[in-house]
Image (cartoon, rainbow, N blue to C red; front, side):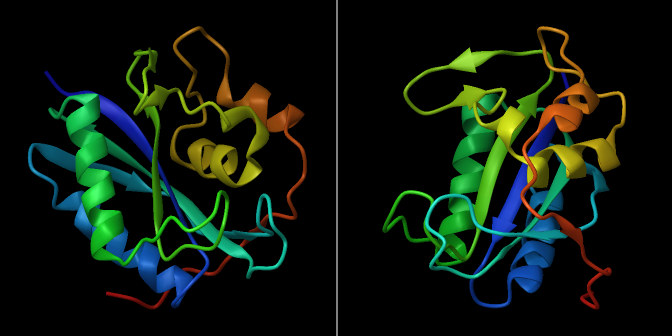
Length: 165
């Protein structure tokens, strides 16, 4: 059975827009998975420590037969292939991939919380989700549009489409 999965992408190191464009291609190539849509990219100031470059963020909509933890393993492998280092909480990174929403499932264990726990506070995640699916709701029924309207401002700026193949 296929499940709609929404993945958040972020980067603020080593040509962030290029990092995201490559990650989108890698996500589209995952086994038993199809890329449905890709959001525009947005720039925003960092969450947490401000002594780092602004982030570039986006999201993708996948249809996948992978289980949530298997998909998480694939996301982390892509991050590692991009040189992801976890040196400090909310610190700079070459690539961050977050499983935001996985069908109508709610999960909370030591490795994975879905829907993503910070979703209501992140305009740079909510806006790309709205771009992908304006009527998207969380498993308990909250509309992403409602969360976006209540979300703190993070100086979100839509970026022009990248010139990457």
